[in-house]
Length: 172
Length: 195
Image (cartoon, rainbow over all chains, first blue to last red; front, side, top):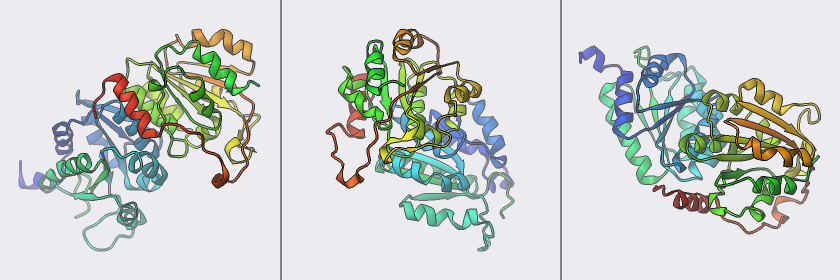
C-alpha cells in the first residue's frame, strides 16, 4: 500500500473488517460517497445486501436479523441517522443487542468549522442517546472498526463508526 | 367489515408452524387464540417498525414461514417498507394488514384518507408477488388457506371493525403477557438459535 492510499479510507478496509467480524447482512441506503463500497459489497459473497427505503428501517430490520442469529450492520449517512431517532431508541437501544452502525459523517472537516448542520448535530445526537462512537478517517484507523464490534458485543448496545472522510480525501 | 378476532381464528386453522408477529390494537387478540406461543414474537417498540423487524426476521430465517399482522396506522408511518420488502422478495413473508381506518389506540381518530386509500393496490404496485383484499369474513375464511401456500412476499388487506380505546394511557389496564425479550428468548429456544 502506498502512503497516499494509507491516508484515505479504502472501501476494501471496511469489507475486510466486516468479514473479520462475521458480518452477514448490510442494511443500507447507498449515497454518492459510498458507491464504490456498495459495488464491492454486492460482489462480496459473504455479505447479503438489504437496500431499505428510509434509514429508520435499518435498525428494526437489523433487530429481526439479530433474532434470527445473523450479524447485521447498518450503513447509512448521518442525515439518515438523525431521522432515525425513534427506531434507534425502540429497536436498538431498548432491544439490547449488539449493533454496529457505520455512519457517513457528511459535512465533517478537520478544520474546526462545520458549516453543514448535518455534521453540527451528529455528535451531540450520539451523546444525547448515550451511543459511543469511533471516528475513522483513513486505513490506519481500520482497527477502530473491530473495536466497535467488540464493544457492541460486550455491551449489547449499538456502537457507531463515523466515517469522517468517505474514501476520497476531500475533507483534508 | 370483519371482527379482528374472527380473522385470527380463521388464520389459526391454517397457521401450521408459521412464526407470527402482530402490531396495533387488533393484534392484542392473537395471544388468546394462538396455540403455539413459542413461535409468536413481539417486535413492537418504535412507531411503524414492526413490519421492518418482521421483514428482517423473514430474511434471516428463509426456511420458516413468517406472518405479520400489521395495522394501517403503523404501515402509514413506514410506507417505504413496501418497496423494501418488494425489492428483497422474501418468499416466506406474509403481510396481513388489519385496516380499521383509524388510530384505535388513541381514541379512534381517522387515519389520513381512511376510506379511500387502497393498501393492497400500493403493495401490488410496489412489487409484492401477490396481493388480496377482503371485507367479508366468509370470503376470507374460504381463501386464507390457499393464500398462505402462495410464494411471498404476499400482501393481504382486511377491513376490520375498530375497537377504540380512549382512556388515558396511565389509566389503562395492562393485560398480562410476555415481554419482547421473553418472546425473543422463547423463539430462539424453539428454533435452536444461540445468541
